Length: 315
Length: 315
Image 1 (tube, helix red, strand yellow):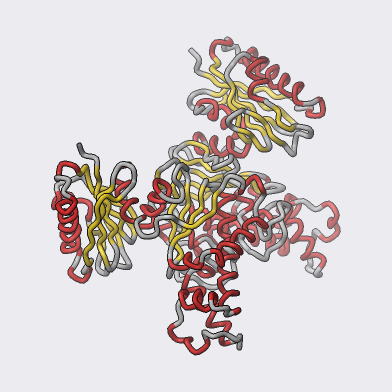
Image 2 (image 1 turned 90 degrees about the horizontal axis):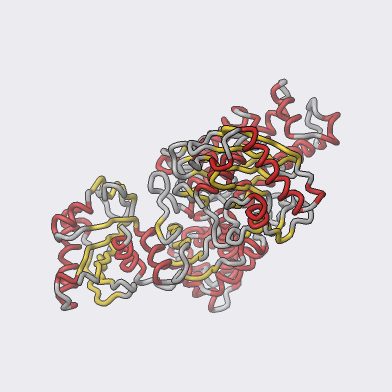
């Protein structure tokens, strides 16, 4: 009985492999370093090797596995299973990863972008369990996103839908790394939080973080806020309010059943969520928000693996 | 052979009925005044009467018609075929229009919102012919919208998706009728254009429109711009630029195959489209816009009728 599917979370640092059940649970997991500097062929080989080690350790027999799903960072040619470009895997240009894996492991493979598979995992087995539509925002160095509609990833005309971080919430706002002005990412990513903290310090705002100006992180801001630092707390509140603008826009446009947040910035918890919800309530009609759940993701650790397996199951 | 479907465009002023073929052409059409003041039951009766007159005049025999699709203004309970509320049809609260029509005409009926059916018409038989995803923005007194994905209307969690006009493009922008700040509608609707023109006149800007301050329309602004009025031209250019911000956001989030514009403001044509596309190019990555067509709608007159029929065909 082929009841299990390999889910592979391919990251810049680690390859995480899980054997995922039809119910969305990881029955066994295995991990290896990516060692991306050895090049794409070596990485593909390590993915397959790690998967084989995983199935051996799980003691389920190779016949139990139907296939392998891979979530990869970067831009994916979905039709051909090719990684077109990946900022976290230097030198990965036009790599036919799906075929490389299929040839090595002898199982059918499905490939999608890591943000998309994470959204799929949350809809299937996480914050969106029981719902068919979910928008996930990953709040890290940048803001990534994935959109699941009717239980499937919405890819768009050329596979780049879900770039929610590059929605402009102010035509004359700060310039984003993408070139656009006022992107949500330029207001509510970890990078944006640090930049605003710098500005506050430079404008003379009193804060315990002033001596750490040079290597400040969003985590530092969160810790300082927990310790009662008013400037740090204001910073997180502003981040929540900007996210509330973005969430309102997603509600008005897509009106999904669930809008969920993951990533390092989401660790700020209620301190982020309260101003976010407050802003969202001010900006949306009751009809637009009534049936929409706004919450944190529930699978921050396993979404990559579970979603990659789901991606294979839906292929 | 039941090859035809009634498409009904129910407006505040007129009821337009068309017999629509499986290819999306109107083979016969008939029109009547809505006379909304006579109440919902009378309007439902007029819809059916107009449909019967249409089929008689078309001389196709009643057996040729498979059913009736209706696009209604307002908020629709899709599951139950009920008009919950309609600003253009006073007194319409919780009107079971689908059942009323079915009982009268003896044919199955499908009901959706007028903006949604217009988007469906454009995707099926207009600007999006051959494409499966399209976002339509209707630029009038307000900005309405409809989203078609995989050839079907995307309704969202509680049927209110596609409120694209209420996407905020500036958290501190002008207050919109909906209560939110900086909605696209507050920047790029006919109402917003007139308000900006008022502001320009009041701040002493030279324009041929100054004497018409009290009953200025977006159409007046367009005419003045065509006649060389610089202030009017700037007004339309700014409208185009704001729409360019909105279009960029839709590209980043949904990456649809087509983004189309209809409504009175769209009559400004190139004068509006050129700054729109210029702004959009500045704000989007080549990958996000490459396969997206941005254009005017092709069925401004018939989208309501054709889309309503399509809505029935897809029920």
